[in-house]
Amino acid sequence: AQSVAQPEDQVNVAEGNPLTVKCTYSVSGNPYLFWYVQYPNRGLQFLLKYITGDNLVKGSYGFEAEFNKSQTSFHLKKPSALVSDSALYFCAVRDIKDTGGFKTIFGAGTRLFVKA
Amino acid sequence: NAGVTQTPKFQVLKTGQSMTLQCAQDMNHNSMYWYRQDPGMGLRLIYYSASEGTTDKGEVPNGYNVSRLNKREFSLRLESAAPSQTSVYFCASSERRGGITDTQYFGPGTRLTVL
Image (spheres, rainbow over the protein chains, first blue to last red):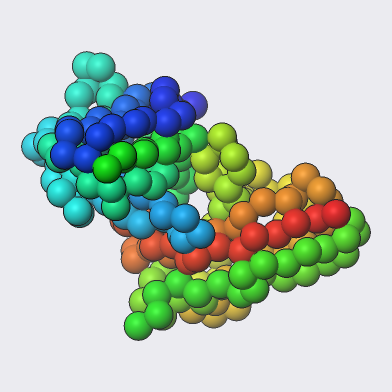
């Protein structure tokens, strides 16, 4: 069965420093990987996705993620964190073999706190 | 263009009461979803509708029913609410049927408390 793990409940980083939010996955077929962000009292917003091709994916708000097939990871990164990046981040995966791809498995979420 | 809208924003129910959560999207998307979000558990899929006229169970369908009223609207019904259904409920939509690569667009959520 497919699964997603976000090993850190919270990540703390100082403004201006690089940030990494970790994600590992397990699927039976080819993975389709997503990152979403949730600001307080809001729904999730799409950041970026990996479908195929270049392992480094660039997304919204200066975020990027690196797909590593051998380590089954899809870590979210940003070179210079902003206080406004503080939010809850979700990694998600789909597997075409599972209900034709309609079922998305979300990680438990990682809260990012950026200190000024 | 409002995107995905949900009503109500907040609701308190007593055990055994029923209610329907409403969701509508104005992006002409084919697929719609209902999730629940619980602390430390991420989002879990309750039901989804791949296209107008079809609905399917997700990961946690027990205690819920859905109706895809038309292409725009997808409602979630709790027939007899239980405290275990206290959660934040999100509706989402995506563009294409069978679109594994599709981005999902989420509504603002409904915070439901069952006493």
